[in-house]
Amino acid sequence: MAGGKCVALIAHDEKKDAMADFARRNQHILAKFRIVATGTTGGRVLAVCPDLDVTRLKSGPLGGDQQIGALIATGEIDVLIFYVDPLTPMPHDVDVKALMRLAIVYDIPMALNEATAERLITTL
Ligand SMILES: O=C(CO)COP(=O)(O)O
Image 1 (cartoon, rainbow, N blue to C red):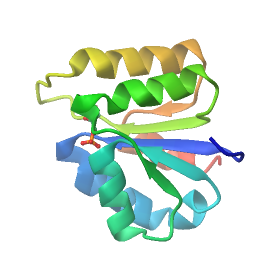
Image 2 (image 1 turned 45 degrees about the vertical axis):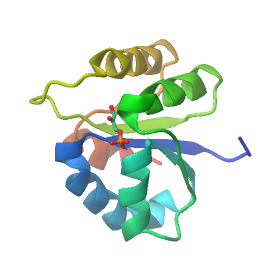
Image 3 (image 1 turned 120 degrees about the horizontal axis):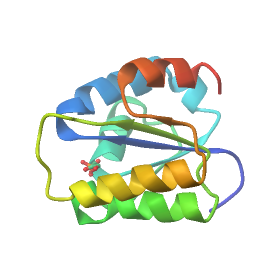
């Protein structure tokens, strides 16, 4: 992937409205970075912020979380903002866990809820 810092954005279905709102409110900050996102999340972000540099990967259940994990392992992600839904069982729960694990292994700043995301984005 090309140079510049990269922010990964992911949101589970119940959190996608909140993620779209977060991106809209913070687009002046996000505009300074390349963004990678899982497929559906990226589509939602682009719908409200069409000028952002968003690369859409696979949808989460189809491998998107694993793709972002791989990008973390190769040093291409600087920040992970992941709006997790803790109340809905998901078929790709193991992928979600693996992604979080790699973010910890590589010590990537990682926000897993809105309160942390709002604070983390102000540090970028
Ligand atoms: O399921 C996801 C993360 O685990 C998100 O994937 P989508 O953005 O494609 O819905």
